[in-house]
Length: 349
Picture 1 (tube, rainbow, N blue to C red):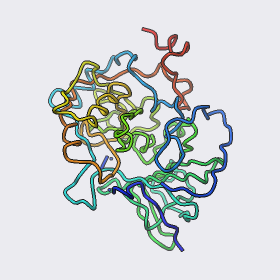
Picture 2: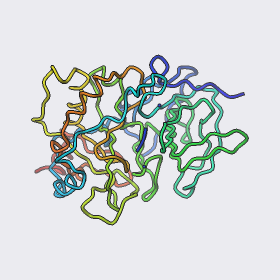
Picture 3: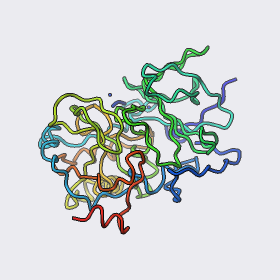
């Protein structure tokens, strides 16, 4: 009998780019990659969206502008483009735009998948069932958080798949799959894809309605560009670009100018929270797609007004920043934290 999947779209409410309570959670096993801070908790999971010192959760307000910033912005048509929130109402209340994610119950069965890119996928069973929400459009991402079981004997595991096709009788397939310990800063092996072209996790970079409503969206946001080059920057682990050095590499990070503002009459508290996040944590280039589209979760609570207000942000108000000074280890997403002595030494000037 199939276990029931509880999605985070329960009291609320599934587009493109290239949570439950129950039994007690087992305690996490200590590894060299696990930070002491638990980080921000994902709704209904008691799980962090990676440790607090993960690069996704690290402010970039003090970082220098990347020397390639102007070139990359030009390749993304920044001078004539406004940002586009790739989530929100679709006109069909049953299927809002965005990327869905689910939290599996303790009894949810796991499914073996056949992967197209098997050599770069984590080939273990995934908590994928007929009830698992899958993203609409061509990418068909499935994001699943398991608060109970993990390959590392630790609770809080994120499973992400691309081009997901659930079929019974052992015939389920996906283009690729990645498994993440949400209490760890460990990255994927160098050169490996994930559910995303950049080899990065998807869930930590989504705009989430609960975070925005709280006024604390404390992490970078995932976004796409039409042209990416055949290279990647830490913390990305994979490229899917073209031989054009004027395009940004996967993993490039962009920050909104601190002086940019929109009046309250045109930008509600929801909108202002996202602006603050873009100034503080910025955007991370994670996939090929339309220029300056940034992603959020599927949620029936998003309104047209809240989404449309974010279309007023001009791309030419961003700069690419150089976050290489934050790196502690190239195989870890741990980042030096502003205010620390190591940060002052590594990122000075």
